[in-house]
Amino acid sequence: MASVPERLVEAATRLFAAKGYDRVAVQEVVDLAGVTKGAMYHYFGSKDDLLYEIYGRLLRMQTERLERIAAGPAPVAERLRAAAVDVVVTSVDNFDQARVYFRSADHLAEDKRREMRVERRRYHERFRALVEEGQRTGVFRADVPADLIVHYFFGSVHHLGQWYSADGPLSAEQVGRHFADLLLTSLRPVEESR
Image (cartoon, rainbow, N blue to C red):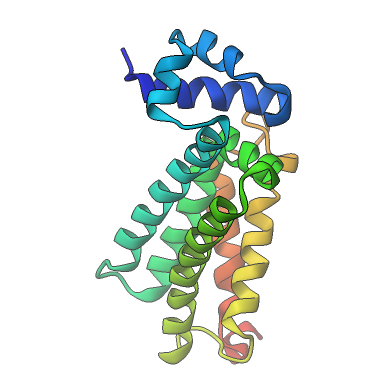
């Protein structure tokens, strides 16, 4: 059986994704998790802390995976491809967590929102560093700012929840490969693109 914190996070994720953060009472979370309010408050000081932990777990997992990919020995284009596929697949695999955060982040206290923005920025900066590495070494075109490339790519990733369905014609892995292909094609030096 999962630990109490795990059960609370899983229950909160399911309920917040289905009903919305502001429509879920703490009692519903503890009932679904099969614990008492006292147990919840032992691990999480508030419903706000649960919301923070839901997205924090996803972001920490994605950041750890990106760090491993980025530090690998493969050429930069292969590392960027792997990172692009990974963020799509892990986002799709964890849609509820991402959906809860993007719908409910404004319910977090300002200090927690700031912390989460710092963590997201760290992830995007590490991803951008791969683009910049490829630009510096001539593997990728350098006439488009790396920030613009990263914002463009992640705008598409963050929009997945609006249209992607696991029951649709493409798997998460296929969508990830297509997104990575689009990203890498757009980064080809101009003379190669013609």
